[in-house]
Length: 132
Image (cartoon, rainbow, N blue to C red; front, side, top):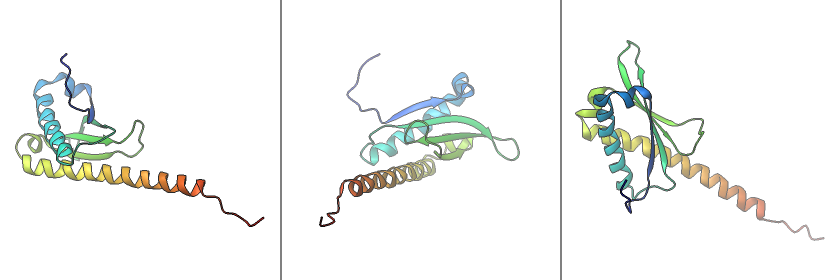
């Protein structure tokens, strides 16, 4: 496998159903390419996120492609978006918009979590002199 200087911006996982069906995998690959573009538009991302793709069904048993974005392993509440097949292969502008919204939500959560951590670290390191 050739090495590249490109930074890792995303780790990918796929359900078996997606892995085993080339047509489905190609549709998901289109969305992955769009997601990668959206990440790069924002200047990249570090540490990398995890994008997990699976197939679920809607209320009337139509297949939907589920994308879950995780900021860290084991994150209990990933950002999730669901797409119909046609959303992944035909409407790149609207697909890019939805992927950007999901990514923005994930990064907002990351920023809030980091702000809380920094605030806790600062308040934990400040000593109040009691005058004794």
